Image (tube, rainbow over the protein chains, first blue to last red):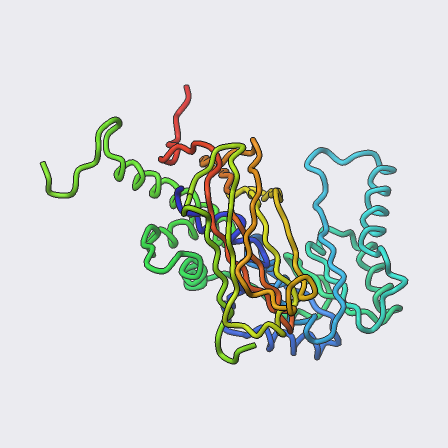
Amino acid sequence: MAPSNPFATRFIRPGAIEYLAADGRSLDEILDALRQSEWWGEIIGPHGSGKSTLLASLVSVCQRAGKRIVWRTIRGPGSGPPGPQAEQREEVAATFAAATQGAEQWNGDTLLVLDGYEQLGWWTRRRLQSLCRKRGAGLLVTAHRPLGLPTIVWLEPTEELAQRVVSKLLPAGDETIDRDDVLRAFAASGRNLRETLFALYDVYRLRQGDQCLEDQGPAGQERKPPGEV
Amino acid sequence: MTEGIEPLLSLCLADSRQSYSAGDELICEYQIDAVDPADIQAVEASVVWYTEGKGEEDMGVHYFERRLPGDADDGDLRPMRRLRTRLPHSPLSYLGAILSIRWCVRLRLFVRRGREYVLEHPFTLGAVPAGVIQPVIVG
């Protein structure tokens, strides 16, 4: 069976791929920054910059530091036109209820982690912050722009970082993807790391496909060793 | 745990088979070494399929066993153990452009301090085309 594509979701999803910092800061240093801001902070970065990947890695470190993690991923609004006002109010109420489920048990050891914080409206964010303060819980969020919490990390993917991520994913000795492939994909994706990896999935698949066909030779013929006529 | 040495997990499919047909019996032997038996918290062996591609992942567990020290003679989970299971009729292994379905036997070792080690041994279920499907322009 063909080898796995190293750019498949199972290898690049948050938690599966190791967080690599563009600015060289270690997870422990980021943890210190979060601790100094009394466990309140935001991770800022554009789409596909590694916010969720950092969050997944950081959460493990926070757990080791004694924090009890309550993780909520905020889903974006539907792609259709906005519904009637009553429906929108219901959606906000449902989002708040989902994010605060079990809040009566939150305390100083709790760290509420919200991935996609900017999807919440201003009022919902205020209510969540108020609830966290009341319970003494920490609040760690990801967003595309600053939203008033202490900024712990500001992610800006670089070409060098994209190269490092790809090197980590490729099996040792695998040269299916080269430096120029990464640079092209990174530029074409608008410096979006996630889209870069998805684009490389296709490049890898096509090249592996070509390799498979080369190995088999023309249909119905046995492949001859190199040099043999 | 033995200081400085990673536990050694080994998996072997009977007759070194790499491919099976639906309904075939899969027999596998596994063993653990280079770890103090007192450090082992649990061993899990499973036969699973999973999707691999650009989209969301899916998986199914066909066979699963979890053994704790109390399940083994002398509390030692390291000695060779055999599992056997009859494989189902679906899903068959599949190699697609944006999605593949893969099967494997997976061995997971849980040791003290929350550390975990995983070994997977892939195999195919059903006849899988050898080549990757090339894109076709329609219209």
